[in-house]
Length: 507
Ligand code: ADP
Ligand code: GLC
Image (cartoon, rainbow, N blue to C red; front, side):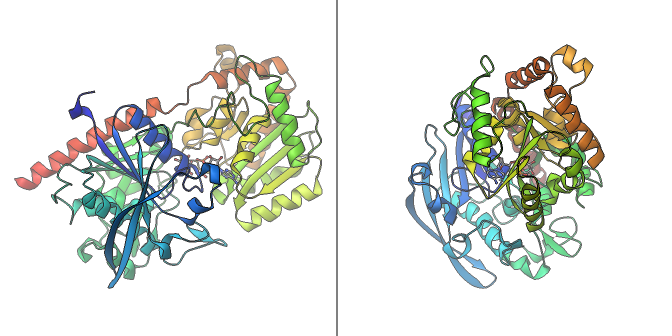
């Protein structure tokens, strides 16, 4: 690669494995960073330094050192000091900078406790976004691209456009804003505006204000040079009233700068041939006995009867309205009429946690639930289950269906967002063509979900066909390479747009 082709990329995110994680964003930010590094670019990831890092198990905890950089930001009239720790991601050239501010980030959770968001989330993530700019400047990172993710970093494109425009170190910097989930927008009351350090005149409907509130996701969309969503279908959905969560008009207006890029998966971490969490390994060439061993071990761990010919469905998910738990509740008795087993892993809304625990109590030989966050069990469910449930109301991308495909576990999904872009429905034609990989339904309806699970159970009773569908899914390539290349193209478009803007301003 010519040095002029090598981009200096700063990727800012509110979570990244192995430092912190509540959902797919954490997997995506780190896996993308690694892939961009492999393509020859220079990548620095900046994340908050949460307590989670200190709590991680000794063997998973990266060695972190203090850079000794300190900075102070005026937060609504009060000075708040931050520091920066750093580490390198093992086996890569990716540098990770952790913004430390114990009052903001040394807390039990990342964003909320007991279902309530922290009351100072606006201050916490305005501080983080402003710290990213401060760190870029003081550590002379001279980014070509600042890649922002979700509302927690939505302020960055605005800062780059205003007070940081043309500052030394930012002459060439363009911004990309990735939308992982439009349901979370970072909406705060207008008196929080000074926390952003932006001029009050930007509090208007074209920039930072939405329905009287400060909206940090809208801010990012308004100011970013390019916008991406985490799947092509989601890019179309966010431009509609149904999927745009009130920002569809703005996104339609910016349609030419909006690209949908399907997430990949980290194929080193999610690999049934070498997964350290599994009791046995397997591959597309030799699925059994490895997968059968994983199934039996999962049944044992979850307290389900160890039977090999019963279809076992898994679900690993944040327990929120997004993920279709209400549909499952509506059709549970119909589903459990069949001889099937279901293993759930997740945390989230108390009403779903309680409901599932109740269901397991009522049907101990069919339903098992583990409430909590458990990386190892997530891998064991992906491997040990026969089918995987994702009846989401909306799903910007979804990673679990791709993990499932790679682990020979047939996904049952709704035809929306990234699920539509990654799973091919089993029907006579797709079976004949050798491309069927799972079961897809259209409407957000419990009847359709139940019918689709019944279709899966029926196919399970034809082991040869079932195995062929497993093989179709396991053979597909879900690695990041292709998606990382698309991000690089998007970065180059962002840089072009940034130059055009600069030229316009000079005229
Ligand atoms: P989202 O980001 O909307 O939660 P994704 O499918 O993109 O959905 O990613 C979810 C990620 O979080 C997956 O890696 C999944 O395995 C993981 N995950 C979710 N809940 C849990 C849990 N309770 N324990 C372990 N991993 C979980
Ligand atoms: C969000 C979405 C999920 C997506 C993930 C990573 O949390 O809900 O669909 O896979 O971000 O992009």
